[in-house]
Structure formats: structure tokens, C-alpha cells
Length: 222
Image (cartoon, rainbow, N blue to C red; front, top):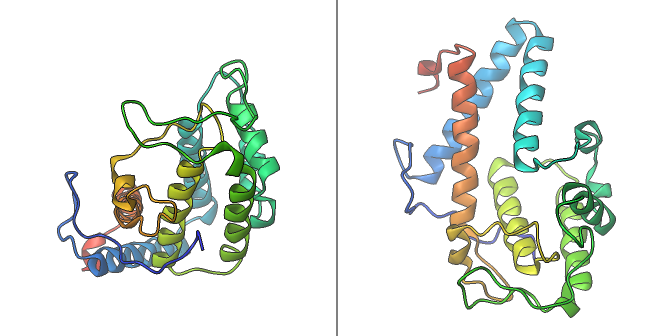
């Protein structure tokens, strides 16, 4: 099983954390409280203002992640459902993002590749098609239902770990994070616990920033 929640999120990090406590329960509780406070403010104010604010920053963040010399159809990505999370979508996105930049954009690699200055080899190219289909199939199944914050973070960490290990393209997905090493780059990649913590802190910081920018009194969330 690629996508699962059968592991603990790490509370030990090597990066400089801005959180007051490393306890994961504390972080999750704070996130839920921030969300509750934001939703409460949305009920008081013009919802269109909030929707516009969130959509603007969501689009800005996405475009920063996939910025290239061509235009990305953000509206199309925003409307995608979990059922459209397929190999065709993966190839199309890579082709769009790598157009005129990556020679074989949208085509799965046929050679072995590895991270720069590392001995570790990514997945055998012969296995890419079957393993990626298995991964995406599990994603479609897992993400069709409402998830708790913790499960969503764990599933996301599992997907990223597995996708990077499969590494379907020769170029364009060279996101090599030190925190993926906690999974030991084994075939199973069973425990992306540090990556899950990294994602959790990103969620915390995003919601905290929203509260600060929109002048929400977060003292009441203690």
C-alpha cells in the first residue's frame, strides 16, 4: 500500500521551526483552532472578500510552484476532481510545464536516473507505468472521502515520497528534499514522517499568516 497513515508524524526536525512546541498534537490543535477562527470571521464579513483573497493566494502559490515560460491554465487545475488524477493528467501537466524547456516533456524516462551527487537510484524505468498507475489509483480511492487533517497530511507525504521515488520523468521533478531521507529511500517508503511534519508546519504557517494579515485576534485560540 503506497498511500497510508500507518506511521507517526515526526516531532524531531533539523530545520529552524517557528512553532512554540514540537508536539504534533499541539500543532494540529492550533491549526484546527485557526481554521475555526477564520471561518467565524468569514461569517461576519463579506464572504466574497474571503473567497477572493484565498483564491488569489492559492493561484499565486500554485503558479510559483510550476512557473515556467508558458501559461498554466489555473482554472482547469482548480476544477479537477480526484477521478481525473490519472497518468494522462500527469503527462499533460509535465508537457505543459516543460514545453520548450524540457526536450522530452510529457514522456516517461527510459533510462536510470539518480539525484545529483547521490548514490541512490530512482525506480527502474520498466516499472514506472505500473507503479505510477497503482499510486494514482490509491490516491483516487483515498481522497474521495472527507479526511481528517492528520490523515490528509500523511497521505500527501506518502504521495510525494512515492512520486519522487518513481520519478517518472528524466527532468522536471528533481525536487530533492532532505526530509525524504527519513523514508530511507526503500522500495516501500513506508514512513515519510519528517516530510509529513514539514507539510504540517507549512499548513500552520499559512493559516497563521492569514490570521495576521486579515487582523484576526488569535489570542482567543489559546
